[in-house]
Length: 396
Ligand code: MEV
Image (cartoon, rainbow, N blue to C red; front, side):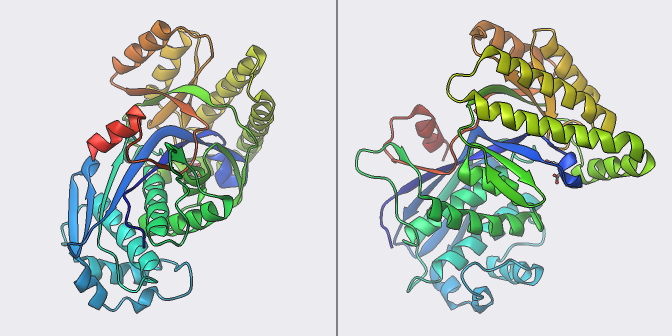
């Protein structure tokens, strides 16, 4: 087992195009968001496993000796154990969660214990570790924060147990794992996501592991080659929404007006494909005309999503505020409130970006300037000079 401190980060995600249509077998494009979750793992010798999640005010500790004595044979079903509901019930007993434990807290703890016990059980003795996880991502906003959490845990635990090598070499500030190692990280992270979400599609953990941009259709995931790192404003309207209800609403509209709604879904599919094509051609020196195409695609999709019934007055306001400044926005994710993205063209002056952010903030929204197409799960030097990494360490 490794004895050094590990510092790992993984990105969140946004859907660029294809939300809702993807439920009906169409293509979705999901991209890594450069808002990241950071994890610091410190092996220690006090016989405890400590987990702290400062964003949601959690601190938990278990005695390794007690965990070692528990019957965890239910986890021994081959290399990557599937977290069935029965297994999750058994994990709850192991965790000793109180009945009144908040849902977010209990899911985070269960995903951690599941990954810790499953990955570390191959060691002669369970390791004593101190793990802290901190995120730049807002929780529960549809930005893949739980997937980034599972990806960080899987990467750090697999590395400390030497199931995969630490790719950080002397003098490196940051590095990434090989394709094979990333596949293993993704496999385990998907199981962590299943503990948290039951039956997720797997796209969130895939984007967080691989980074960049992914195409997703009917369970098939593939990476886009060399996607450009686009600058965006990400806005959280903070209007709560229920994904299940919104998805059901689209289904009902499709059943009621098949001749009208099916062509909308086909058109959204074509938008995703056109966007994929343009992103593939943008490379390292995108042309202004390519940005114009991306903006038109954003506008058309936003209208389609409104026609599907998943818009919201707050999202209309977001589109109007940015439109007044010559910028183009659409909802991302389930809609009905939630988050929206605004494309920032190169050459846009910083005061103009700041003024737009200010205008959105004064609508009561949270707004971040960030990029999409960010790198996937990465390992950082704990003495990195990167100010963001330092800020994350300060938050732990
Ligand atoms: C939610 O982030 C995206 C939807 O397409 C639902 C889904 O794909 O499961 C609305």
